[in-house]
Length: 61
Image: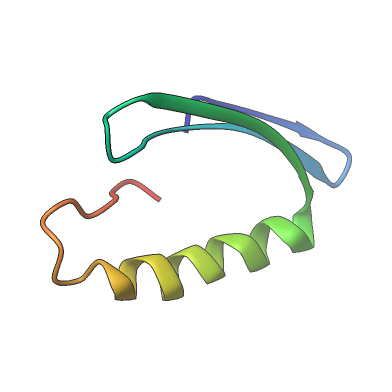
C-alpha cells in the first residue's frame, strides 16, 4: 500500500506488487467504502488461504 486518499465515502489506493519475475507493478484504484470493505475481506479470505503454505505470503493488509 503506497498511498491512500479518502474523499466523501470513496477511497483511492495505489497498490504495488511484484510478479513472479520480480517486476514491479502498480495500480491506482478507487473504491466506495463498501467495495473497499468487501475487497479487503475477499483478499484476506482468498489470497491468504491460498498462500498459507507458501513461503512468499503477502503481509501488511
